[in-house]
Length: 267
Image (cartoon, rainbow, N blue to C red):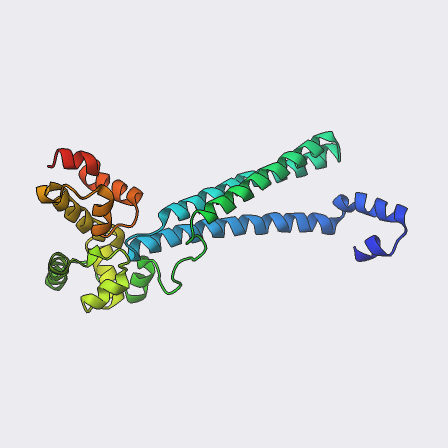
């Protein structure tokens, strides 16, 4: 291929370039590119799904919005890839003509728009590229390594009750940066054991487990007449949330109403 491009005269070079699409080696490269492209995108979807699961199992204020945005961007790029496939198909059927030129133009503008959107989302989410702690694993992987029994015996019931008492008495959930590692240190329990206790035996994500206590604390404050001067924003920060959107979503999930409506009509 290098010989055909660099070591021939101009007419031979033009003939060689025009005939590249019919070369077996070039066809092989196109097929290889498509296979690698599909593998890359499947791996991307799986990585995003795993990151979201790890977040929910280990963090109390995960940046789910950034992961959802990344998921949508990945899907959009995958859809745009079909424009490239259409261009290849048109080139194969009609050759290099006006139709292909229009597809190339649309392709270019579409990818430019998606790239600008990607950068816009990244700039509005400072934690977008920080990723997830590589030491953390989905609970299923931890369980498959240790293979514990999932039956809730007296020992597990005792651990669950002890954990609940600790949560009520010490209120560790008020810390907005609380992680399962922090809580494990406080209750003096191995992280893997605590993760299995919450995610498997209590059948809850760590995210939901902590936010239930936060919502109950928020309900107490909203019902308290002496704290009417506190705004919703002040309350959500006080109970451990770090964004109004996540607080409102969680509050409505557990109570069926908004914090403002609950304050007007406490149940």
